[in-house]
Length: 64
Image (cartoon, rainbow, N blue to C red; front, side, top):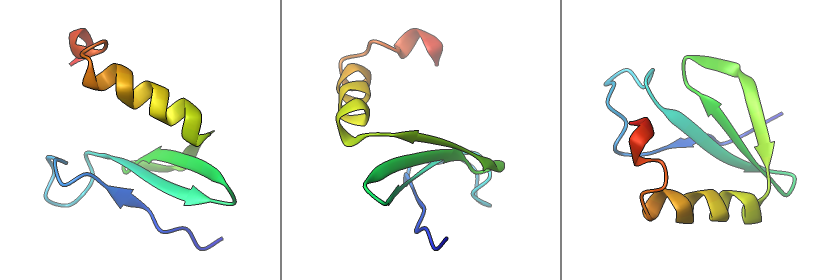
């Protein structure tokens, strides 16, 4: 499976081991943590969009 993972330019670890990575594959959005790349979350564009909108509005600020 050839997946092109992308990570945020805001990732804090120079080696790339402290970030979330996203990819699109077969119509799904995939998410994984760079330090545990074998654990992959599958979601949809709609669900990811809803999550990102909530994050932009500060709904998860208490978790950081």
